[in-house]
Image 1 (cartoon, rainbow, N blue to C red):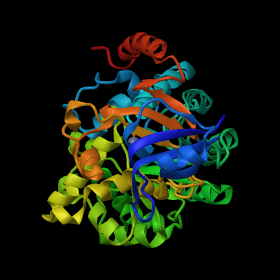
Image 2 (cartoon, rainbow, N blue to C red):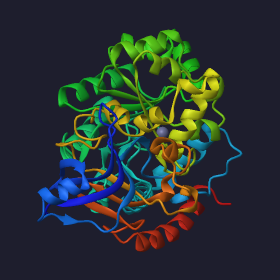
Image 3 (cartoon, rainbow, N blue to C red):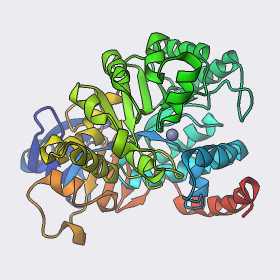
Length: 448
Ligand SMILES: [Zn+2]
């Protein structure tokens, strides 16, 4: 791939100094960023480099979505009723839906979920750990050109889809790590369903597997207070404290949700360097109590690692990290009663560099800096919501718009979105196939 220049009226780098380059450009060479600077300087110093079409109003690093179910719910998009609680959403809909998925369903579902993600500027997606057919999802990730992680369904419950012994579950995890070794565009992670659906033996062994394989691990925990009640009755301890005592937590762990944590659990998370993926839309939609109980402010205040996620279509629905960042910022500001407690810049950091650090990729992505992978998002500033153009790019991005203004996206130097449309795969064909499949799945899961 020949080197090329991406031009922007404002380049929001999210580097340590939070540098913003006006009338700037980024030189992309292969998969990496080779230079960042003034457009006139880079044009002069690299006369042979190509130049991409148009000028971005704002160019930002690609967004990180740290918790996303790529399969299952997507094929029931906006079909699952929202008058149900989270247990009904999971066990009445999501689990049977996943169980009915074929390899082709997983491929279609991941393709459409990633198309929506990339078109909204989400270049890195942590798969949430509910994939039945990892090879099919990996194929979808590579075809469309999305960075991310991949796991497979892991629980050692007595029955349910893909239930197995500890040894069987770990073997499936090892297969994923072999399919997608750490460090690639898609890297295998150890993933368990979590909640109270994993034995102590399984979660301890899974954590060891992630550590010894040089990769990460994720699982669901305490989006509502039912997980705490289950752990208390089984172990006498709250979940994060119990997992800490088992030696599970560490910098290689990304806990999904962690809405309901007490002080000791916040201590355990922060002290071990474990990270949390917060999916605020899901907690609001499923009425899980984040406004009353959420402890993200405490985790952040103590230097804990937090990233943002969009979860699943029976929870958050829209895969849009900017929309999520605005909501998260609003929740924290309202909770503290102090608008200065969490700013638009803080929110954009969670969506980019801080999110990348929380998932262990802070050295490779999350900011526009020389040597980093070229994951870039160009915003178009001609939409009515941008007019008149604002002076502060963080305010404009977080409070003033959302993913709908994304025009062009590159992942590892490969253009995946041009003029708002996916250019790597035929999304319309996938959508037609998915619509037909959704009808049949709907009849299978829950005849209406
Ligand atoms: Zn989830």
